Image 1 (cartoon, each protein chain N blue to C red):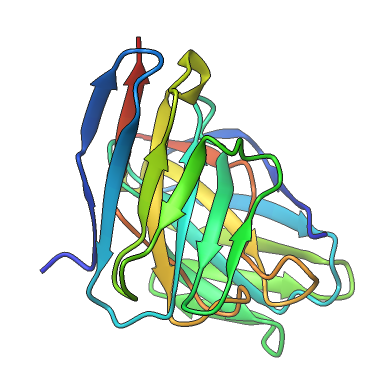
Image 2 (image 1 turned 30 degrees about the vertical axis):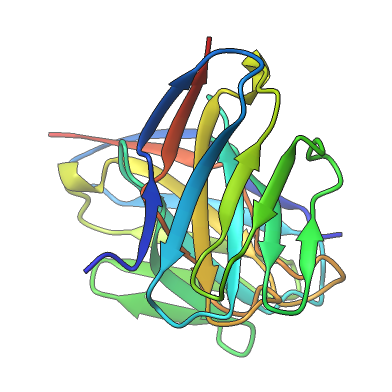
Length: 114
Length: 113
């Protein structure tokens, strides 16, 4: 029973398209996150969200937007995809925010923009 | 905000040897320090963590030490095995204004049989 599940696992798309990545957690956690991992394996926070607050990393382009239909889901929408968006995107969740608890990560979505 | 430096970026050891990965952090308010292991094609997985009220923690072959004064913490893996080969990330959190875990840039550990 997967704790944090992301779909799709692989996504290949053309420049300019709009795409979404879905994330669901069944851990009952309050806070969810999106991270971007580039080719050098650096993990960069994009968003953190609980039912009260969305925190956006100021370096993230506004073409990226998180959408949370409920506490267990945080989907990532990307508009007008660019070549530089190619990366692995990880969803994660934690019991609470604030960096006081470990994160549980999904298995990642490898996005390739051609 | 918090900044986490991790060294080395790559580490190669012989099976059975020990491996040590070191991290430093900048925000003295940080009080939670987890370590993650990422195997090829998978997401990072929490392997051990330590809070600032503890100086050392062990779990079988892995241990983490924390020096709050110097603001550094380390991961120690003893009797390494080929399945320990992975990318390891340290992180710091629980303090400062950013409110999230801040990750180091990772260490690629290779254990040669």
